[in-house]
Image 1: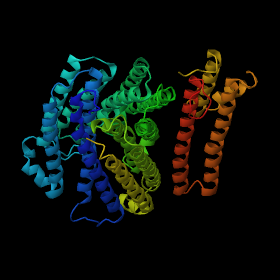
Image 2: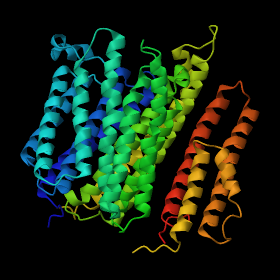
Image 3: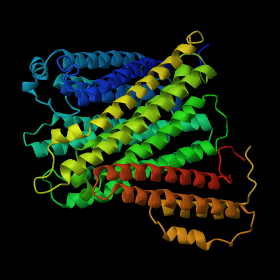
Image 4: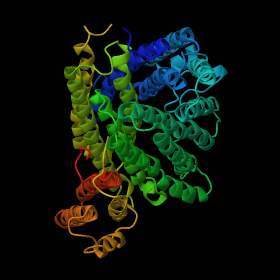
Length: 462
Length: 122
């Protein structure tokens, strides 16, 4: 017997499965690149460092997009109290996106990047060659088409069903995601101008509209697992959304400090960035509060753990580690160092990877026909996966922070020609990179453990 | 159904204490601690507010020791002119500070709900 409230929610399954496959790929490429930091020749002929880095970051973005789409397809019918407008369109778009993503990654790996640009006709509409937005123009157009189809499907479902705050916040975040991606097509030849608009995609995604998506998914999960009144959770969501937008939009200024922009950006960026931890702080307060005031003991303990973990890790990674280097006088020394990498790792894992894993944890038992929750044994494995990955990520962040502080000390602070060069500094940081690689391996073990939880209930799954 | 043992006034007092504790760890260090100290002997011995006040003072003293004293010791033994000193101090300070903030947030949530520290509901 199906355990889904609406049958069309099942279209979320391929999105979640593919997201997890890409997540695994991301971690493997991260480990390859991590080793290349200390053993420069490792697989250098096959996967050069720049390619490994590009695949690592692009897989992250794409698997999160698959996760958000799967989350929306699962959540929206239940919130709207109606079947999805077109399950067939959702499946068609899945295949379009999956094929495009796979071909793009294969393109990165199999041909030199310049050749890929030639093959895909980048000269006619140049958008390639920029960090995180390396995708060929044709792939970017594909992403826009998939997003439009997805928004149409989700939007039509919402229009014909119940309108809830969670749905509205989610669709606002998703529309924002699509709109801000359009700046990736603007590629001015002036590099300062290029960077200026590049941040419109990168910053306004992760420190703007994605927070809305995260807040909506977290609110949905908290309502389901705690049984706390929707009205209470919705009020919190309003506060979080307001804080995220007020701080996040002008917080873009922290990327404009050193971009040949007027000096006032250093004030604007510093003040509003200092406020950016607030929505994450509110999320911790609200998640703790809802779980503490729970009205039911949900059998899916793993989903509860993921929800709480998301709030805490997002606060630490995005809030605390973001604040660490966001003020202009500090950022003058730290920008582009390993401190940025430390922040990026914990923030992406804590805020976005974990929220996707939270909804997967909640939805998968239902999607697989197991029921409200997986078996106890499967949940124990899942929770082991949670702790191994999360603790490993904490240590990855700590080691990268250590590397970043030493990098600033050796490369940025000394004056009068005493500063070491970038490569000399990298040599001095190798102990941190080895430690990061070791904890990265533990992260991979955690991921494998997490994946194994799906095998435990395979007989019960229908 | 959850039934609180404490009345609204007690919960309000305990919540205010938890907020001062959180403020001491974030925006208003020291000043908030003085406010907390000024509340000693203001409540009945076994009251809910006294429980939270004692917990808040202990927590903030532990935080001061862990953040100021230990950091100072690291600097003292490591030396100001060593890069590794700053690696340890900065990484240690941020991590431990964040942990104390999280404990204080949990304390606030428990106070709001009329609960003592721990995880179980009343």
